[in-house]
Image (cartoon, rainbow, N blue to C red; front, side):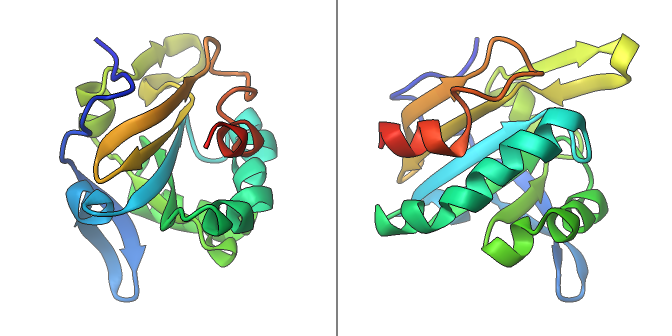
Length: 162
C-alpha cells in the first residue's frame, strides 16, 4: 500500500556523494524536527525527470525556503555516483537540492511507490511523486498516475499546496 498524507515516513539508509566520496545518510536525520520536501522520480538522466521535474524544483527552491522548508531532496533509485553527477549536470546541486540515491529501492518499496517497466529498462524504480513532511509526517502528497508526466508532482504544484 502506498504512503498517504498523515503517515510517518519510514527510516531508510540512503546514499549521496560527500566530500570524500559515497556516504550513507539516514532519512530520519534529515526529517526529524524539520520541514522537508522530497520529490522522487523514475531515474536520473531520463527524459521528463531531467527536462521537467528537476528544473521545476530548481526554479522554486527559493520560494520553498521562504515558506520555511528546511531542505528540498531529490530521490531516485540510483547509486550515489549517478545522483552526484546528475545533480552537477542539471544545476540541482548548485541550486541547493540534496540529491539522494535509494540504490536497492528499499525506501521506495517501503512507501509503496515502486514500479517496474522492463521495456524501458526500468526495474524496481520509483513512481513520480512529491511530498512535504514535517517532523517525518507526510502533510502533502502529490503522486502522478503516469511516470512520464510531471504535473501534480512538480515544484510549482507542491509550492501552491503548502
